[in-house]
Image 1 (tube, helix red, strand yellow):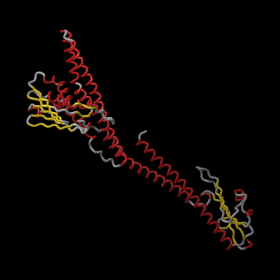
Image 2 (cartoon, helix red, strand yellow; image 1 turned 90 degrees about the vertical axis):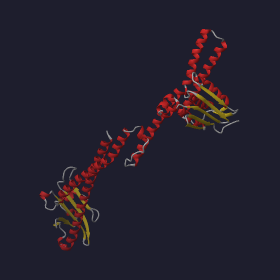
Image 3 (tube, helix red, strand yellow; image 1 turned 90 degrees about the horizontal axis):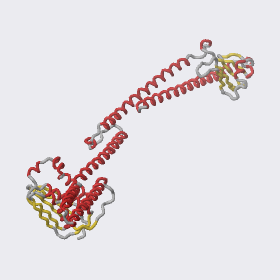
Image 4 (cartoon, helix red, strand yellow; image 1 turned 180 degrees about the vertical axis):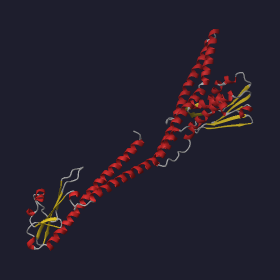
Length: 428
């Protein structure tokens, strides 16, 4: 059952219940009003009877002003004694008996009352029959039933119209919320939530947007992780493959064992680097609360080691390297440090086609500069990302922010320069 059908049914049921309830209340009040009017007429008749009828004429029961009046209860007509064997016990107490059912009108209504006067109690009774046989019963009952029916229909119609208008007024913002939810995309998730007229709907829309934004951020982190992983694992995989090929050639030439052991060591270091890179990228992607473990690192040795590992990128190029370092040790997470510095050195080697790559290290500041082709300035960001240049810098920026390093990149006169300042946790 839809929400719209549920609301319509609820309003109609509410209107029907109100109509039936108020109809029953109106009927009850109408009957009580007739009973009060009858009691008032009997009281007035008793007073008039005491004033008009002489003492000698009061002994016998007689009809007076439409009522049977007697000084003794037993003197009243038989219909009264059959209806009320005991009679009223208090003055002003109205007795009433009818033979009606829920859906039928009564054949007769019998009233009886006792009224105390100065000459003693008077007993009055009256029997009312349907209008066709009596001129006393008023026609107001029939008119009242018709009025009640008309009012009930009007009230039911009014409630139905109000419910329909209210449902229409509420359904429009709900339909707008549903249409907005179906139209959400990456662009609209960054826009403010529209106003849907009601705080509850606005809150629901904000919850939907936040939930979808969280999911989109998770997917974006997964995409970045795959890009970063493919970019970072490319170098150790290339090292492994090239050393495997070299190992095969050495086996064919039967070179010395020391050369084979050196190749195996390089393959082992490359595979270990792949393991550390994967762990770091997973940590960066899922953003855990616990930081990476720090350890003492010889910064000049790390720089020269990474530069040696990346030297294959300069094979066949008219490029020279200048490495200037000074003794310095620091207490930093080793794997992110290898990723950051390795990225910067690899980018400089990979995108330098001639000239000199300069790597300078003074205490906690590392500067890497390399000549860049003039046309690279006009290259699109998409091309840079496909070559890995922009992607490596993006990963470097993210990791630097996470571990508290200061990283800057600049380009001037076809010279690309990057600077990294290691955080304050140093032990020189």
